[in-house]
Amino acid sequence: MVCLFFIFIACKDELKLSFSEIKISTSNNDLVEVNIPSAEGNKNIADQINSIIAKNVIASLHIGEPDSITSKSIEESITSFNKEFQTFKTDAPETVMPWEAQIDGEVMFQSLEIVSIAITSYVNTGGAHGILNIAFLNFETDTGNLIPNDRLFKDIEGFKKVARTYFGKTINDEDVVLNVDTFKLPANIAYNEEGIVLLYNTYEIAPYSTGIIEFTIPVKDVSSFLHFNSF
Image (tube, rainbow, N blue to C red; front, side, top):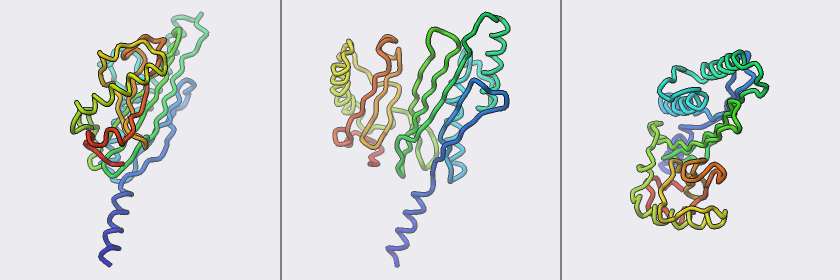
């Protein structure tokens, strides 16, 4: 009977937080498509996670300096993006290429301790090429708070040594000319089912032509360095 009680409690913990995909749009929207995970379960935790995801989407759709963002919701940002295009088209009627924005999110990893989510945004405002950006967001499941990269590790220097080796192998395999001696961790680090993913966005460490550099370090090679060892 006692065993059954603890199994029941464990199941309740596992069901504390779940995710579904939602599509967000507005009336008279022809330019923006948003498909992102939405946290459900404990209201305070879910609201915190959803708020941080929304802020990321809002920032991706913003035209102008980051400190001039005024939109309070994704819907408001979609409306503003469409209005910005209409204004641009009025000012430059010879422009035939419409703007577009595609934002997709996915849950990369989920355990009782941590959730890793990837938000991929592609925004084109009529330039030679659009801007592709991927953001990894790591959340504490107990609070919904965003986890800074340095808090993912209990031994970040040990992790860096292993990561540098995998980085060198990746750039060699992809025939990318970069100096391994100047290696630094990327802005985007997250968990997936195989281990720890490191992703460098375009321009982060190399020219645009290099594109995105991404690789996964198997959990067996880095488990001793991780703060959240949830595999």
